[in-house]
Image (cartoon, rainbow, N blue to C red; front, top):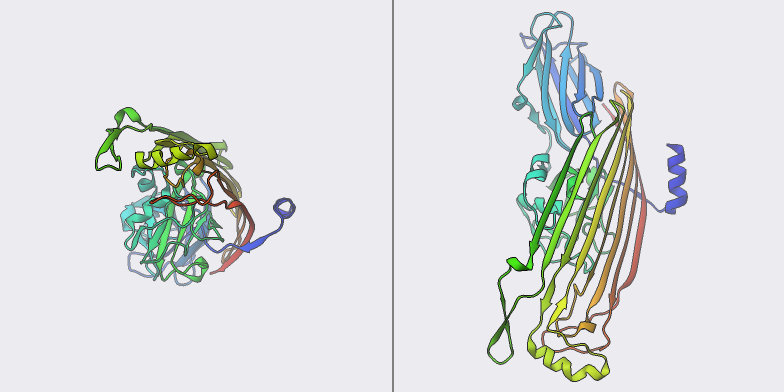
Length: 456
């Protein structure tokens, strides 16, 4: 871990920022007997059903137990004590949630097991924030154009789409929460900021196949999720498990499936055109164990290829045709291709029952032409936009004592956005058109550090 920190300081330039959000969950509960009297010194074990990782606790003098900062997953909680049958309860624990388990022990042999239905788990009884979890099932099954997981936030009351304020990320979901602009929404991935510190909003899109789940808090969220006055989205990536799992997907749309479009000709009529259009999205994922119960791996990849175009009015084309001797290139169809590649890799290692760590790296790179075309029928009035985005984190969870846990998170974020105008006709502006400028390179990077302790 010391070597990792040292390398991060050297390679990433030691530009520190405090991480704010948590990417974990909590289990609390009480143990009683058939007379509702508390059971002291009962042995409690919480087992992650995917990786086999366990956490143990002993009930206090009030019969209470608590597990802080554990990874969201499906868990089985078992409670045992001599003279009583073993209590077992399984449930799904989502990010940011607090599951309350009310275990009632019955007299019997410890070898006997009393299983309780998961529906009896009470979630977030003490929380006051207004939030909603986007479950793994919703991530997997709900259709999304562009496969941007942030679009699932529209399921939450008070959230709607807003206009893009960043011309380099027109295809990313912009969330307006409770009437705000969307620039004040903070997004984290595995507890590391995924927010553009220049213009606000999210920086990169994590491959949908790598998104496990996320939580969106719209009001009254805690100070732990600071740096935002609008809303907070906490997202976690998938990890491998003892069982191998994977996916493959492919979507396409072709020009042959499109109807003709009517374009005004400037003389009160119109012409019918069917502009070039083809889009493919494909990819997949694979996850499993490298060393059973110890080392787990996961990888996801997504690729999008889009060959689309804009059709301009013949009025603009006729006007541009008069300017060919000064460099204009008239065209009724302006190509707007877009190519995007995303991938995520994650490694989880279980040192022992008290210490676990994981490393996650996500990359997104895309480029597009004429996505901000002025629409004046000139091929030289377009632009080229490129994005190179990276996000990584290293997290170490440690149980220091039965009442003290610690989580250390190191995060790295980098983005390079470029908009290059190609106009050979400066200041040219017909009705309905606009001049494009050059933004140039805007590289940004930050190295984030977070260390939090919870005393229970």
